[in-house]
Length: 248
Image (tube, rainbow, N blue to C red; front, side):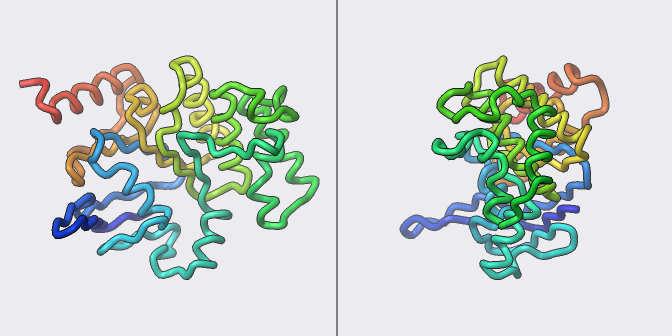
């Protein structure tokens, strides 16, 4: 469904060129929950931004359900981002002047698809993610975990092909993190959502089908979830420790 092939990206500062991504390749199947992990500076967020075409890349190609994204013009890309991609950010990115239900419906409102069906879909997502009781509150009146679950619902209101999440638990305490990751698991199970998540959190990553681990802009390992969740988390932690030289 998503195919990333030989993606390379570098930044130039003065006379120096820094390679951030070095010929990265992988695929994501429909309905998969994939995480990307790695130390700071390994290229995780740059990779996410390349997939969403918010930043250009030097070589390679990214295709979403057969469409090569880098060949789309600005208008076509905007349509893809609104209709086929859903976004969840570390800082929630909710509009303070809108109630929770209106924040969830915002992608439909922007698209001009205002309908009773949109209202019903919002209620359905609110129930699924346990935020029905806050739909008529404003972002300033709810907790961080509730804000992020609102953001997840907003990302799914258009039934996107792919949901992209950048450190979705990064600003949350452990209890709120668990509720947010549970919402990702529910989205995958109940809505057959396909999720691509950048995270530092081994707990969050342990719910995924596969975890891509980056180091210095290259794929260090791709780890498949084959045991129980706790064993998978322990395996991820061990690999990250080995990668950083903490184990001999």
